Image (cartoon, rainbow, N blue to C red; front, side, top):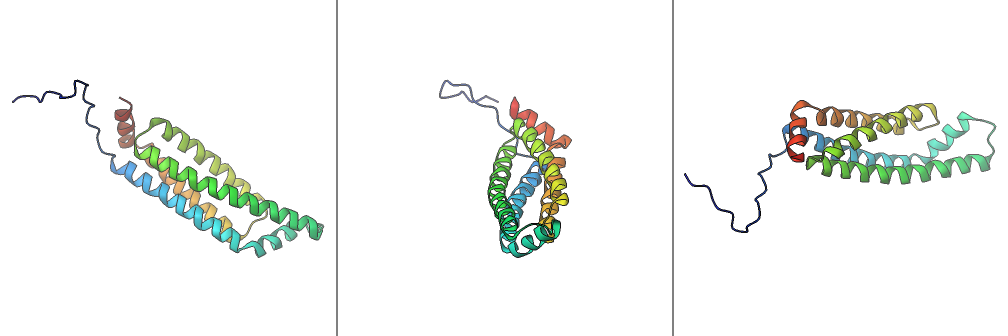
Length: 162
């Protein structure tokens, strides 16, 4: 049997293994995280009325102006944070799907930040539906993190580095 001779004179790149099922599932979870973040953003905007009630309940001494200011800051933070979250989910899905080893580390750091954000969400005024979506997003992140650190996934990342 004869080996084919490269026609371009350039060394041919070794054939890359396709992503294992663990990576494919992690990428699907990351896309689900982006979708949930989008739905969560919409729900946060739709439930603005309950946010005002939660702010008043947290500190009844707030004036109407203070409640409005807190509500405005919370809404702006939710919109900016939601858009950033969607972008990060999509970026991590793409990079991890291609086996970028740095992306596995970045995704893990982002999951740790999400964990801290979930803990902070529990301690501040919030609408119940917002908390439920934060918990669902955290669970998706947990699943994706476990899958990208799986032994089978590690072989894929190592092969992509070579």
